[in-house]
Image 1: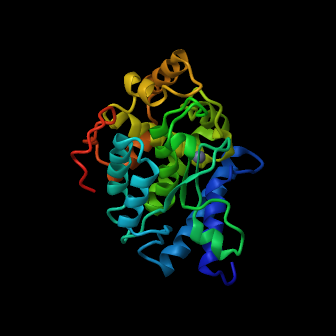
Image 2: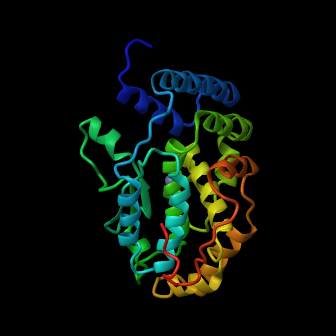
Length: 283
Ligand SMILES: [Zn+2]
């Protein structure tokens, strides 16, 4: 492979992680893709046995930014903090930066600012995890989707690259991507009634199912009453909200994703998303 800088290696890994495998047939293509990923992981492990965490903030800075982003919805602050508190326990006090972004059709975005800066490219977002301002502060222009679910989705993109270990990432490729293939993953990865970018990358399947896992484990996250309250001023109707919550309640989380996440996230969260008490802020 010649000489690779760490930046090039990290970019190669990112690119390989988000591409659908191609080949004469999908199975062989995926097998080759997995051995390529294995080679890249081994290279990184040789030089950085502890792994590399990409995040612009310390934990405290990250948590303060979360409080700022979701300040109009205190229960969201608590719920997001609880998830992030667990995910950043072993990341060497490195955590993603959080910010809102101006309203566009993108509800949220996860992009490693340090890696993008290293290429000399202009930054398109202001933080590692950017949440559309209409999602962070629901109003008449919001689309119907769970603000918590959208946020959990972006957080789990970050967690895939920075919290999972190489064995867990390979486990995902070997047990989900290889046996299912793109067509089934696109079908089974759709966890919202909205149009989504599920076909863009195998990462979207991971982020969707991982976010669903979090929503199912966070008390109140799939409570229709809470949704109606939060989304009361949006363009959505009662029927749309009911359909979206109903779909998420019914849909099972991929068992392999559950297995991966049981190491990194507790089975139960203590925050209740449908309550707005500030009393238990401890992170
Ligand atoms: Zn995504």
